[in-house]
Amino acid sequence: MTTSPERQDQPFVFPSRRRKEQRYPEPPLGPSEAGAPVRASSLWRDAWYRYIRNRGAVIAGAVFVLLVAYCLVWPLVSPYDPYEVDFSQASEGPSPGHPFGTDQFGRDLFTRTALGGRVSIGIGFAATLVILAIGVTYGSIAGFLGGVTDNVLMRFLDALYGLPYLPFAIIVLAIFGGGSFWTMVIALSIASWFTTARIVRGQVITLKENDYVRAAYAVGAKRSRILLRHLLPNTLGVLVIAVFLELPGVILGEAFLSFIGLGISPPDASWGSMAQDGYRAYRVSPHIIIVPSVAIATLILCANFIADGLRDALDPRTRET
Amino acid sequence: MTRLIVRRVLWTVPVILLVIFFTFVLMRQIEGNPFRTSERAIPESIQRNLEEKYGLDDPWWVQYARYVRNVATFDLGPSLVLRNRDVNDIVREHFPPSLELGALAMLFALVFGIPLGLYAALRANKLGDYTAMVVANVGFAVPSFLVATLLIYFFAVRWGDVFDFPTSGWTTWQSKVLPVIALGIGPMAYFARLTRGSVLETLQQDYVRTARAKGLRQRRIVAVHVLRNSLIPVVTAAGPILGFLITGSFVIEQIFAIPGIGRYYVTAVTARDYSVVMALTVLLAIIVIVANMVVDILYGILDPRTREARS
Image (cartoon, rainbow over all chains, first blue to last red; front, side, top):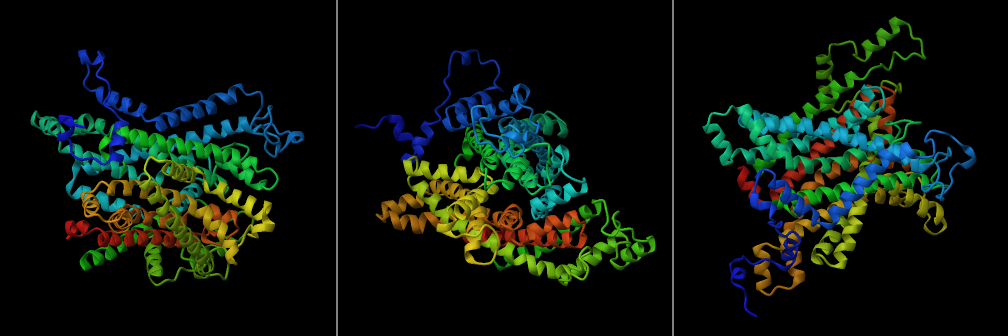
């Protein structure tokens, strides 16, 4: 067997690595490319091609969308009232009428899981957005200004890393006098924006060295313009990944707080408070705790796979790290 | 190296002060007062005397300075709610179970997680890899309260005659098995994923190729060249995880009725027992800070490159 000429030029790659790279071939240069209208969109299109070639990430994305759609839509069309107590059919196992069974108050779990999902996922996304907002502001200021400011801000962040997450969330909940949607959002985001801030800072520092930034300075652009126009838009890829990296932690945090009775309280449902209900009855009807827990697990599993897929798609250099 | 260690150890002092300050500021925002509850009508003058006794009427910076001084001398003050009990007593009573639970769960996670990840990496993209990674991904996603409940349901209730694990408590070794597994399974999965990724990367390094070219056996290559170098990211992650395990066992402690800090913490917050909450939070923070410090130092020892870069 003779080796092809381009094969010789390539550095030696171990077979395991080679197979990996074959999984993400270059996007096809179709006729649409010929016109080459907008260069800016091609990064996202390349990323899209790389993403849809990753089977695990695509399945995870589809399940994620389905789960969110189910939570949003099902309570509107469900034949059952999620709050109506009916002890004549309490703690029933799964049946055709109640696919997930009923809880100890006879409420349909399929409907209540959707309702709880609205709250859990809602808190998850809201807290993630707050985390991103704080993290981007803090991280970009530190990275962009550099020097002493950066040093002070980062040492301060190091100190904040010492804050124990759940105890602080509990104190914050106590300050606001208990768990509701927005107090949970604040409690969960206040002690978890540090990682995002670090990521953004790192990204801004790397981007700052680019020639186009120097060019922008050369033509006399203001610093605020360079930050807002040239640097921050380029951190978008990292931020999209960060959403799905932060989401699992926040959703679990909500579940833990509600489980120990400090979060969302009955009769309102979240997956955590439903799990707490289920825990009280696990000996006779374990399905009541299994249903919301599996919902949490599914969501977190999907978020992890989506994050991995997005990282491979948007930032091929950091693959496998 | 010594300089690095000394600097790193000294650095924890301002960090701890800052964390105490944060906790202090936050605690002052909580409404309510342990002495001004509605159900017990205490005359105004007595209330004022009580507040004076515990120093609650001083300006905040006086309280803060006093608190820092007390923490430095390990005098955490009296409990505000449980009369005649010192916070020191409470810590002495509730801290050891939490510490033991966290440490055992950490051990469990490392002992099972690293081999699992190594195994997966060595059979990359084969059936063994996929099985191990399914286990790791699921273990990472399932909330610990479900793991705990299922463990109790099967190993203590349903098949209780066979296994004889108690459903709660923290006394005999049997009572510790289930909580440790329930708490450790998430970090175990995390370590497995981390190890796999790191080993896969190390396998591509030139020195591994050199070792192969020398004709070393696979076993020796893995043990000497791959594993040691792959464990650096695991060590880095271990610090925050250890902190998380010791501070984040609230749920597990509640489910297994373990008399640890987590369970007591929630009670103390609801009762507005400032001194206890302050003390426990600061203690938990110090654990996290020290764990991070140990990791940074270990990192310097394991990876000489960071040492040179810093000095």
